[in-house]
Every structure is written in C-alpha cells, then in structure tokens.
View (cartoon, rainbow, N blue to C red):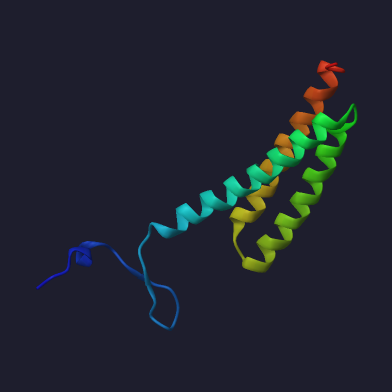
Length: 106
C-alpha cells in the first residue's frame, strides 16, 4: 500500500538522511523577512512618535539591524538574513528622507 506522500519529491539534508520536502525553505525565508520588517516597523513607529529627530534615530537603528543581519547571514550561511538587512536599510533610508521632506508634523 502506497502512502499519499510518496509522489512528492524529497531531498536529503545531510549524511543523516533526513528527508525534507521543498516547501519548508521558502516559508522560513518569508518568516525571516517578515520578522525583520516587523521589528523595523515597531522601532520606527516608536522613534517617529517621540519627536523631531525620530527619522535619524530610525535610520541609526536600521543600520544596527543591518549589521546584526549581516552577522547572522555569516553565522547561519543564509543569504536571506543579508537580504533582509539590506531591505530594512533601504526602507529606513527612505523613511529618514521622507521625514525631512515632510518637515515637522505637529
């Protein structure tokens, strides 16, 4: 009797012979990117609501997050961490520029 999962392609993940389907990796990548953006959104909203220099503080924190993501990319040997850090840095720069172009919102 054949199981329902016998038709799915499987790949070995190392010498132990652990089998994984191809669906876990992209979902994990989206979780990493989403987590980075969530953390960025939380400290950006907090920084912008505190005062006039919130855009600069958000950009500085985005730089720190980029450095942390780069270190994690090297440690885990996964490029999604680096790409998440670059995405946060680009969005942080855009937030800083838009804060200055809009001026004081009070």
